[in-house]
Length: 151
Image (tube, rainbow, N blue to C red; front, side, top):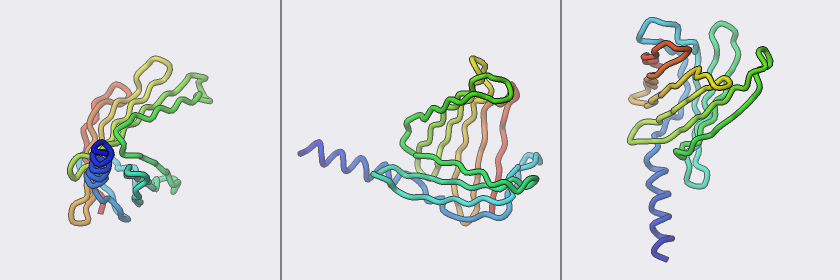
């Protein structure tokens, strides 16, 4: 019985630890001056069995295409492997989403066959209607260090 109570308490605290990021943001800009590659952003959020689920919809400003991303903030890595139709190589992505205080923390690793393509960390938070995304890591052998602000 004691373990059941602690389990319920831990599930409750893990849910509370995730920030409310729900909103629609019509303008996003990079603080580095690089194109943000996002013209509109919408975030939906729900709780499923004690895990916070984020669905993020972003619009590509050049094509108008809507990209959908789904993150379960459980702290467990999610691995996806697909063949690349252009090269015949195997692309593996490992994504981990977790929450700490007011931040959604994302970790993304991409491998093509045995070559590392990207290893990125993204910290996302919402403060007074401003969504901040801080990117760090490496992509295609180049360092990544940028902040994107959406309002």
